[in-house]
Image (cartoon, rainbow, N blue to C red; front, top):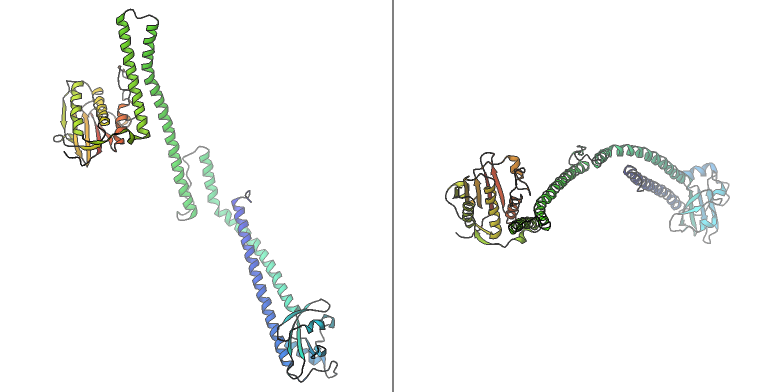
Length: 482
């Protein structure tokens, strides 16, 4: 059964139900007709028996006054071609039967004696077994005997047999016609499923852009199926695209990590090789080499710690925080001093958010050490990617129900493509520029955004090429008093 197609299984199921229904209807109709025939015959027998039971006595067994030309029509009128009179001992006291009925086809007398005299009709077989009889008995009213009336069931049996034959032939023809019609209807009804199958085959072949066409109204089962499949296919396409993008990012990430790790490692290995080969002439050369090794090791340690922090923030960001009430104005003031220390030629101003008004309170529930790391990365980014002496503004306060700390510069700014990727790990807007020892590996802004999101906030960027950039740390504000 499982090897059959859905169309064949549905057709077999429908044909089986149709056959069962036709069989049940035929059985009910034939049963009702048989009951009707028997009730009609029992009524005729009962009328005849009650009428004869009122007679003064049984007719003689061989009376010349009994004329077949008169008796036969009378018996046929009542539908009772056989009447038997039994005395009190059960012996035959007389009887009548139609001359058109062969004596061998009558029911035997022994069977007639077994008919109950309470008016209950019973079935009897003919003496020669050629047919069935229906018999009914009543006690005589005016003499001490019993009157038994019997009628053949040949006509009723023939009618029922003809009905069953007609039902069988008609049902078989109807079953064949409806099965053929069902085969065509199922083929037409399952046509949308075949189109869905072709679409699925195309998708399995690699065409993820294919979709199931509108095969039926949305409210139908096929419409629901097509809509669900299209939703699933869209999700699959996005999942494959995301996976491909993730794999591409992973390849870029591994390449960048390899490059960033290789540079300090090569410096350390090269310095160690010079020392091993005795190429360091004097103590000063050895000291310089050790300083270079220490610098590269420090750089390698910082890079490793940054990567570990990013991995921890990806896995369980909330567990990396030790929250406490604080105000972002503290970080803003320290950031101003840090910028002046890094470049005394810069003009650094402290304002409210957006550059309007004085600095305002920005109460948050946060990990101060982690937020200092965020602000340090933002300040370091402004110092590293703008010319010396460029003006920088640090804004702090609340805006739109959020605590805000922003670092805005008047440097060269970024393009929209650069701004969309600036928070990516190991991304640098100018990848061709010469890297100085200890330079940023491209993880600072990625760490800043990850830490901000771990606090339930974010780091936003507003920039235009040639008009500077504004990095904005936004966090949920708390009721911490000023």
